[in-house]
Length: 322
Picture 1 (tube, one colour):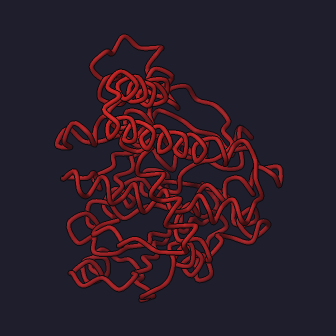
Picture 2: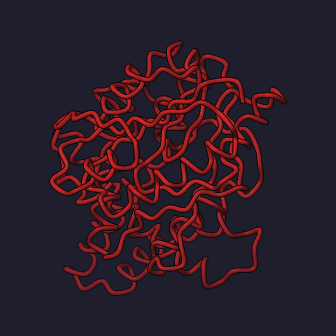
């Protein structure tokens, strides 16, 4: 690999993961035989994460109190590489990560690469199921309209062409960047193999719900910035429909109209079931389908709350990790 690579990692209280992440990056860079650097942009951690990152040879930049997009942009501004890689602080990349990226570039397959990330065996069932849902949507290698920045490789020229990340977005900066890259003509390639291990799984239900609320608050900002489109509107509208059905079911219960309440509740379950079936129809996995049915039902309700937060310009409590 003749190009210099800069790996940019935003971090907030990731002391228990950052050493694993940096060790994996080092092994991948050594296998690819490339010139490389790592820039960890710390968002005001109160744990030992910054010290550990320095011990592993990373350049640590202290940037407390700014958005995730701004963290990534600060790292990119200091980066020396012609190629940029954005990575979350709890991701363990495979040893052939950068070899794969180099081959994609040499074969002119795409301008941007993202690998599917999967949970380790230690993750609780809901965290494993949720990440399997992401994986099931990308089980086949192919071009996508957006890629998550949990792991993302692209030439600096493309990053600069679209102006980097939008620093005004609280969340959803990855989708926004990917959409703009696609609009500018970049091909976004998703590969299921090799996969990245995601060690930042949610260990409690409250953490899972809190992270989803944080993520779903980006819908209103994205709509205000990019304008209404089916791509951005379909899930928020679905969530609003679920909330409306819940309200009607509650009214029916108060009025003791039991059949109507039961019918409305069952109707509210249908969209979540449809989403679960869409993601698992190609696999005979009834258990995973049932798990995703429950998780999608919860997520649709959380999305409704996130829309309300966004409309009122409120910011939910930041997740403890990630």
